[in-house]
Length: 282
Image (tube, rainbow, N blue to C red; front, side, top):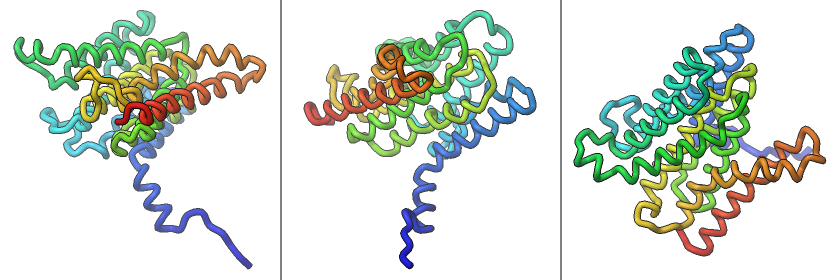
């Protein structure tokens, strides 16, 4: 009798190790979301996404939580923890003030931190365009994420689109994995109880920061050029913009309409990144 297997044991273990960081993010986020639901501990559920990203990126970084990181991936780990703390503070002490105060704080902090954390006036003048661009990216993704209640599918779409676009655009595989971490953490939040959209802001900041770090490392926007990697970095914004418009066309699909719209929007955005690779190169 013939038997067929997709993965041998060694192949399966290797596959799991390759994606261990997104899987860690998913596991931590899911565990905290379920604990928040069953223990009726809203604080745990609210922290699930942000702490899931921090846990997933911890394994990627070479100097996790160092105050003097050498790599941008190291900076992202600490950034994930800080933006999560900002969101939790806003949920605890100012839940009715809306998303803008914490989002602006996350945007300014992300821009400053990823631009090299300048301490002097001269240093700030040298990097302010980069810092401003990163802050604008965080605000843009956060704006699409904000809403009356948290919808984890929104950051999941943004993160998955970024990962897929970076992959087809020929970026380093490590950045694709970095982008999958917030997408996986967002999926874990689907198990959480109903929460305000404030809890998704860390994921929005993490996704925007991942794209910014990727472009600073391998992109061309800082030199005024637009190639495939740069288009890939911008692809989550295209997907988030397209989703509600496609949802209007897919109303006949009923409850599956929003999910179908998100998948289609993400596919279009990834396709644009692939097309730009063919036209303009990396």
